[in-house]
Length: 596
Image (cartoon, rainbow, N blue to C red):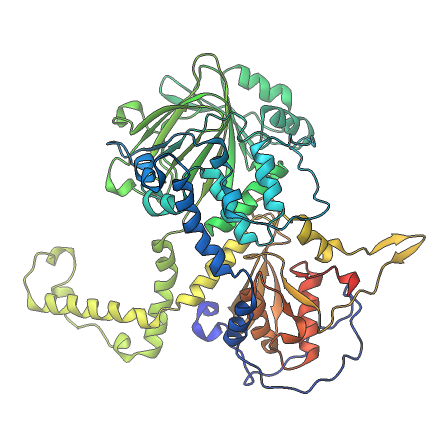
C-alpha cells in the first residue's frame, strides 16, 4: 500500500534526479533534430498560466456552466405559466413518485437550448447497428449530430444527459431526485430512441457475433413465483435463442456496448457526466410473461423503453438497511412486498429511473412484447467505499508519525471493555471510549485523501469505455494524419510538432496523472476495450521535469496552449512530452498537423 502514501504522490521538482526525456525515435512525427535554443526563463506557476489562459478564452468554461442554470429557467419560462409552472410540473404526488408529462415538441430538443456548437464540415451520417443510416427526423439522430459539433467532451456529456431526461432540468433531477425518488418521464414519442437498439439488431448480433450463453446472453423466466435460468452451453445461435424466447423466456443481452456501436457511443459520452462507469443490459421479453423475480440492484438505473409495452411495479426499500443498497438482493416472493410506489406501463420513448435499493419487477401483457435498455451507473461509488480505502492508510500514517498512536493499551482494558462489559458504568470504560474518539478524530490529519482519490480515478479510467471521437477530434489528432502506403512506400511522412503548435487533450477525463511508488504515471482510456476489463490498465511514465506541463495540459482543456508555453525547463522536454502524447492519441492540434 506504499503507493498510496502522500510521499508517493505527485512529488516533483529539482530535488529529484533528472531523468533523460523519452527518445524521439519511433514517433510518427519527424521532430526537429536540433530545436532552436531559447533562453531559459523563470517558469510561471501552473496556476498563473491557467488564470491567464482562461482570461483570454471566450467563452470560458465557467460561462458555459452558468448557462445551464439559465437554460433551466428558460425552459420553465417557455411553458404555459412561465417559470412558476416548473414546481407544479415536477412536484411529487403523495407517493413521492415524480411523473413528468411530455413537453412541447421543441422542448424535447433541450440540447439546442444549451449548446451553441460551431458547425463542422464533412460531418459523416450516423448509422444504426446494422450499418443503415438513421433517418434525419429521428430525435436520436439529431442529438448525435449535435454532439458531433460540440468541441468540448464535458459539454457533450451534459447535453446528452439533458436529452436523456428531457424535459426535466438536470439540476432539479440531481438536487431533488437522484438517489431519492423514482422518476417516470412520459414523452408520447415512440421514435425518441429510434436507432439506439432494436430486436432486428439483436437478431443481427446473434447471427454475426460470437454470443455465448451465460457470458453474453441469458434466457430466464419467472413462473409461479420462481425464477429459472435456462442457458444451454455454448454459442447462442439464433435457432436456440429464438426457441427459448418462443417458449416464454426473456433474453438478456449483457454488455451490448461490446456489439453495438450506437450503445457504445451513448455510454462513452454519459460516463463523463456521471464520473463513474456507465454500463447497460438489453432485455427482450415475450408477450404475457415475466423474466425476473422482484429484486433490487446496487446501481442507479435508467430504463429506456425501446419497443412494445411493459408493466412496471417499483417499491421503496423495505427497511433503512436496503436504502442505497451496496449489493443486489436475492429474489423476493410477492409476499415479501408491500404496495408499489409506482405502477405504470412503459411505452416506447418513456424513461423510468429508480435508485439502488428500490425493488422492482416488470411483465408483458396483452400480447405485446417488450424491448428495453437499462443504463446503470454508480456501483460502489459511495463515501463509505472511499473511507474504506482511506482509513487503513490513515491509521498506518498516524502510527508512523504520531507517538500517541504507538502508546500501549491499558494493561487491564479487558477487565472493562468488550461485549460482556457493555453495560458497565466503570469510569475506566468511559475514559477508554473518550480516548478512542480523540484518536479517531485525529485520523483526518493523516488521511491521504488526494492519493486515494487518484487511485479511484485510476480505477475509473480502467473501467471506462474507450472514447468515441467526433469528426473534429479525429481530423486533428494522430488518427487523422494523412500518412499512408502508396506506390510501394509510405507517403505524407514528416509532419512536425513545434514550439508554436497549439494543442489540448483529446477529451476531458481520458487520462489521469497518478503517483505510485515514487514515480508518476499517466493512465488513459484510448486503448481500453469495449469489453469490461478485457485489457490491463494502460499508462505512460511521466518524468518529474515534465509533471507540471502534464498537469497544465490536463487542467487547461478545452483551451489550446502552445507547446512552447508548457512549463518545462527545456524545449526538448516540451517537444518530447507533446510528441509522446500526440503519438498515443491523447492530444490534438488546433489545425491539422500537416498544415504546420
